[in-house]
Length: 204
Image (cartoon, rainbow, N blue to C red):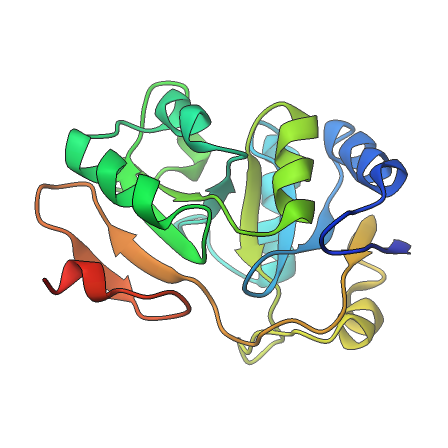
């Protein structure tokens, strides 16, 4: 595994470019978000997606999320209602995953049985720069151990996944709490998971 330590606010672009090259060549990376570390690959590379399923020991039915660089990219891969757009505009970038109906451009392999996708725009410059430089969303799922616990210490992550991942971008120890997941696929929002992020807007 290639391993690089980056500044979380002003990440060194040469390391970002190395990660993007790995992604474009079908590789798997680990990178920081505003919540936990994530496994990432190009959403359009089925072999890389399969590798992440194997690393996570997950079945192909688990919903992984997309990292998008900004709001305008979301509508390419998901159908966004006026209500959903207003909510996301208020809360993003931030520690939220929004479940939305998938558009035709979303890879079928990454859709749920309900034909939805999970969309993230994290408030973290490394993750956002990766997605922007890649040119399309980055698939993301949290880095966990065999028990399913999130891992937030980069040294521990490197030790465990060194043989399985092509490159890791480290930015120090992260918060050991995942994003909040909110389903906006219908007119009635549903909170799937309470994690980081203020959810009071949904209780008004």
